[in-house]
Image (cartoon, rainbow, N blue to C red):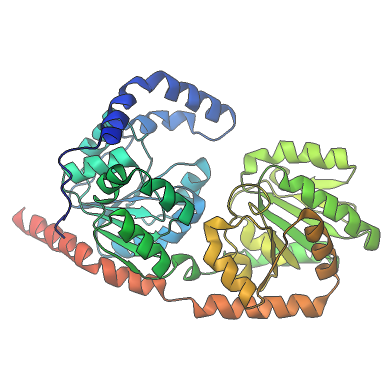
Length: 441
């Protein structure tokens, strides 16, 4: 696709953004030191954050896919597997340790993972010089001004897949219209989650945008080891069980308060706490101890025995098991100011979803689930405590929520087929180029 905007003269903001990066090295090193101490960076691969490759670039056309974290990585994996089946080299970058672990476990053979470099000119240039991508796919809302500007200068096609943008973010971008046009004008195509998202991306300067749906609906439910599930269910028995999943600081306290009230009605009730960031396990242990509740810790290999009121699931990749053990799922990030976490997985599994009011990251999904009576929204913490207790002891209401949620998520499937169809012209060109390269050897 031809770019229709004149991006040759950078805005004052973009010029300042570009120049400031040359002075950020010491500050970025300090930031990485702090993140490493909190378990949020991989010390052995730190140089990747400065654009230094730790793997060799394979010969032939290469697609760079960037996904911020776990949710975006999971959404992108089916697209990555499709490209690998076509014989296209794939480089996946992410920004978190947990997403790197998911990539390690689920990337197809031959695909490469690297940590994304900081959006600073010397690091981005070094990264692009080494990897020289022929196509870039950005997942959801990863908009990095300097990276996009550099890709534009190199005439590398850029496509956003599963694109989403909040109205609030769009307003912020529009306040610096020349700058935003410079940034978004480097994006050739946006395959958006909804027509609303597509319209916002178009307004910000993306060359072309259309709605293909949300890839998260097309993913299979999180997997589970059936033997481990059977063992866990036998160990728990008929106890009432609920899960506080993908929680952020402050939400574990809320869950523990709610659970304390539940225990007054059912002394054998079990709460599973699965924090968004498993490295917070020790912090949650401390909270549970202060609450005076008996607990077990999954990372220590412990199972929730009959005396444990709380199971701290501070491990990665276990939500497929943990959701299946629960009668109700509270999906976190919705009482913390995080914008909510993805409710699709528990809905797929027929687990009733309860959430708080802060769900801007998945605004349309939550609205649709609420509209079809497939999830329960709680405006206040007191509402939440009452709702959890009432729902845990009302099997008819739980069943109704679960059926409506499953029906809704099933109706939303199809985004993967539409996304791959839209990407086909870009990918076929790379397949043909790879074929010509092989024939020329």
